[in-house]
Image (tube, rainbow, N blue to C red; front, side, top):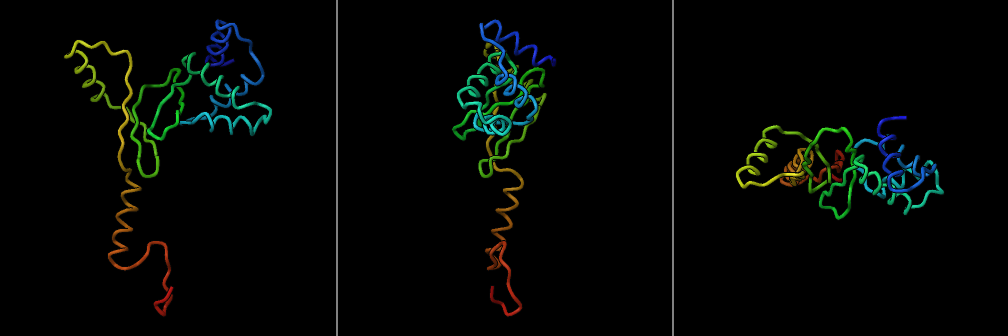
Length: 167
């Protein structure tokens, strides 16, 4: 049994809940999936392994994972809650591309120090923080630049022109 499984089983026991095969499966699928996932994503992955697991069971178990400290809910401005591993994972922040939705995780000791200094300056006791930086990623900027250049030249990106000059 992994440490994460032990944490989860102790948590549900404290809540007076039983260990079930469906909860075990949801836990295993969550722990085996790196990155950010919505409840819908987790439900789809669980359903591929056992179609009898209901969406409500997945969402309730996801809440238990969050309450147990194994998952952390994050919001990226798309109107959906996303979840990522939280237990023994280093704190990080997120940059989110507003064009394609790409999420870049990063850690900056300088930003952490600045946040601590600001909290101290205002005599504010930090209990946690979330930093989301919204912008446009390098890939999307490159695509936009390429499309602009192509339009200036009168060529549509992705189109082909025959030797006669017609598409």
